[in-house]
Length: 110
Image (cartoon, rainbow, N blue to C red; front, side, top):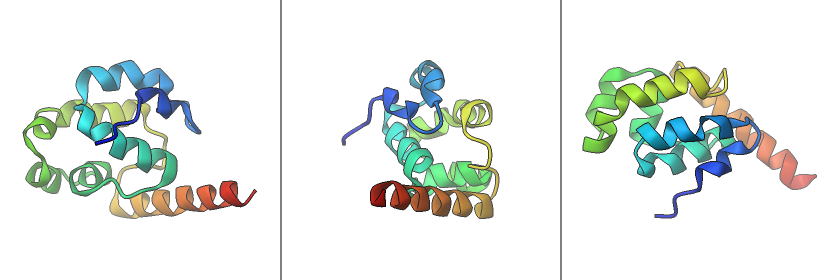
C-alpha cells in the first residue's frame, strides 16, 4: 500500500504541525485514508468514517486490532488537529467530502 508521508498533510489545512502526534499514536495504515479525506474529500472507509461521524459502536465493530487499540488516540487527534467542520456527524462528513471534491474540481480547472 502506498502510504503518503505525513508531510503531505501540510496542504490546505496546515496539518503538518500534527505530524509527530499522528505518527506516534496512529497506525500507518490509517494515514492514507485520513490524508485523502481531509485534503480531497475521499471517503475514508468504514472504520475511519465511523470515527469521523462520531459513531463509536460502528467504529468498534469495523476496527482491526491495531485500529481498535488506537481508537482513543485517533479520536483525540481528530478533536485537537482536524479542521473544524470535518467531523462530528454523518451529515457533516458528507458535506466535507462534497466541499473538498468541489475545491479539487475548481483547482484542476483553474
